[in-house]
Structures are given as structure tokens and as C-alpha cells.
Image (cartoon, rainbow, N blue to C red; front, side):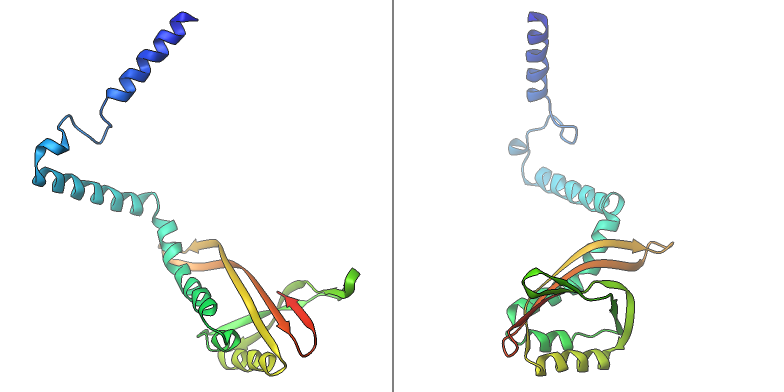
Length: 179
């Protein structure tokens, strides 16, 4: 037991006094500004290379997801949230095909999407959202999560999958909806 403790203490001392693999024995405080600049440039180059090799797909996914992140931030910063959602530029949106109505306790109605449904163009989407707004619906909050990101064979963005949640209220009808 004593041998294990002595060995462990020795390893700890060596570990605490040994330089890190990316350092040499030169002390940065004594080497002057040019050595510090060289080391900073080296570290920055190393991090950029790591971003390309180890984190390339993650960085690309983050960049591509920024569009919905910006939308989310904009929605949170405005009072007329449905107007902003209606004006969001898109080619098309696919609404779900809703399954049968399930009646739950406390007058809760549940419908689950059972597959892709109606496809709406940008103009049809705007009209659909405006109709909701005219019926008294208000968007309280919205959330997006970037769950999946795929690239094509060339490593370029191909498709993303987002989890989405929206909470709406209609004070005229005393109703709430969660999508």
C-alpha cells in the first residue's frame, strides 16, 4: 500500500511540473512580445485546423442553423409575432396531416401529426398565418432545436431537422394551442 502511495505522489509531482505538450521550456514572461505573438498565431492556427478537421460538420451545422436562431431572436424581440412569422421568407412549408381527435380530461383535445400534409407556398403561408391572427390567435412563445444536420457527398449542407414548439392563445375564444 505504501508503494502505491509513493508511486502516486511521484506521478503527481511529475505531472504538475512537466510542460504541456504544446509548450516548450521557454517561459512566455521572459521571452518578449514577438515570442508571445508567435505562440498566439500558432494557437489560433491550431484551433482553426481543429475546427476544420474535428468540428467541421458541427461548425457548418451551426452556421446553417443561424437562420432559424435569428428568426427566434426576432420573434422574442417583437410584439406582433405572427406578422413576423408570416413574413419569414421561405419556398414552401409542409403542414402535418392531423390524426384523429383524442379527447383528454379537462377538455383537452389532442391531435397528432401522422405524416406530411398540405404544402403551402410562401404566399399561401402568409395568408394562412394572417387568417389565424384575424381569428384572434396570438403567438406567446416559440422554440427551435436543431436536432439533425446532414451534408451531401461533397460535404455541403443538404438538410436539417428541427424540433419546434409554439404556444398560442386566443382570448376571444378562451382557447390555447400548443404545436
